[in-house]
Image 1 (cartoon, one colour):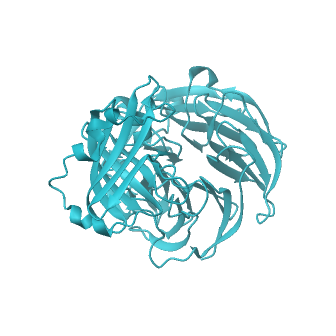
Image 2 (cartoon, helix red, strand yellow; image 1 turned 135 degrees about the vertical axis):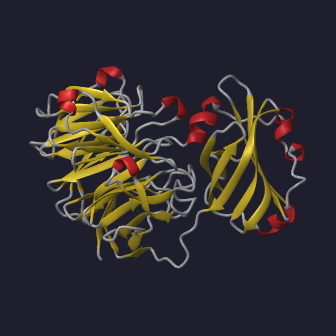
Image 3 (cartoon, helix red, strand yellow; image 1 turned 90 degrees about the vertical axis):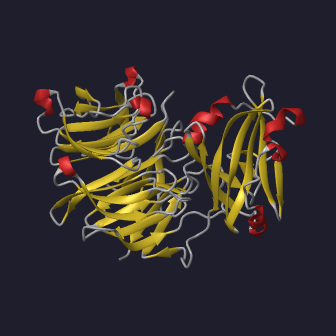
Length: 482
């Protein structure tokens, strides 16, 4: 997934460049002005301010968003900004960042610890001040990101190779026919020859003006590339090393694409913006898609943040991760004739942004999760979509959320951000059973600690290999060795 953390999408919009050191403009965000009288500050003596911490902020106005704190290595950062104040003593934990807003206002982001539950976990109060006045307040939980206890670098997963594209940050990978197509937002598409997966070779690259690539899907000799605001770019793979990507569709309606799925001659496009809908295209002629219908899941509301992100389609049923609206199941059997997809049912509850669908022991099964703090991997029985039943749950560590997943046979491959690649045996319906892992993230790596969503961001399975994309390490090619 490529969504901005909620905190960045709200609080950070007003942030410009530069620092402010005027103490008069920090008054209500000074540690002395924050009421910590009900706290157990004696517990703060155990805190070890080292490494990288992930933090979840819950504001009183209802805004929730995860972010990060970096003590080391490198320059200290607070929610991705330079940490200008660090006051940690046996009875205090206070961090602040001072910046100038675009309008010249002085902003201070302040975190004050209330209690510690261990050397690497602090709970406390967060404030945002504008010219010294408190403009927003809430609470935070901060946890140091460390490798899971007792784990090695890898278990039953072999890293064959990794490569960072010459430019940009990888946002998606799809592979077929011995080639990997690596998307890197504004820097475009990088094509690697992976016939020898241990030695990927860059064979060509393409950049498209004013386009940022988000996701991709290969069907036969066609590659569909989703963009952040320009719909789809269509690539002819007749020459797979140098695809012809001159055709586009939906580029004139500012469509953002977050997910793609295909069954038969229909391509389904998850578009959170501008209309929060699923666009159904007839791709009988792959280079010239025609619009079938634009479908908004019944009952979902964009004003509540119930956007479509992840998609899957199986047996003429469309499965959608609709964030806080949950997973929906829609009948699309006759959509070309009726132009009217019909909602069959949904599973609400925890927010969801990623899913995988398959038949497990003959049961229509949905695996779903999200990149929210404290997310879980849920296993749903959708055989009767009007009454979806949860059959299992695997709780993830709050500080390392779920970026994406891919189901291949009875193995589920999960991109688990700071917890890297996780492999689960799902041959028996219920809670997935661990079947391997590879820890891709280390706080010692360069450029870590910039954001909550770091590490292995997504995963794609093709031709017996597992392709992952990592926020720092780029394209990573694995082999699962059961």
